[in-house]
Amino acid sequence: MTGQTRSTDSSGTDGESLGVSVPDEHVGAFVAEAFEDVERDTTWKEVVGALVAEEARDAWADLSRTEQAVEVLAAAADYDERAVELLAEVPTDRGEPTSEIRDRYEEALRCRHNADRFRDGIAAAYADGYLADDQLVAAVEAFGFDTALIAEREDELDTVANTYEFEFRPYGGTLMTDDEGDDQTMDGFEAW
Image (cartoon, rainbow, N blue to C red):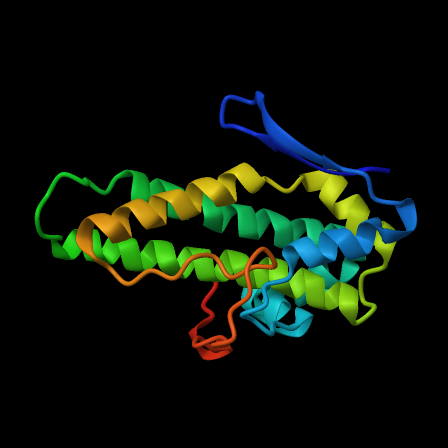
């Protein structure tokens, strides 16, 4: 298998894709590293606690580990989409932000935070042995990993932040490292 990341836009057509040849025995580790966020230290248990309501835990336990990972990937993508939708409706032609603009920006940041935490939790599940290589790869093959959506989210955040001089910290995933650490804790992790 090649470790390819294919993105699909909202019209269903393929966008640019990055093809990287990865030996089969290393694909799971490659995917987990792509999901890992160096600014976060999320556990699988925290992700399940945030995502799955108490009354749904038995149904969750009946899912295969691959199905569980697919559900987490879907939730992360939903948060990314919500962030993009919120930011797309922010006008960038005003001098001063309104309270509604501030609220939309803050909600988009919360959605971003949750999406990144969910994917980081998948990386932790892999590192802890809860998800095996084949289970993680199967989950990504079943659901996908839309890097174009994440890039759009970051572009929208950057645009709004620059327009209104909001505080903005670029994505802290494995593509970047930051020695300052994570200034947000799981106490701020609300998946609703």
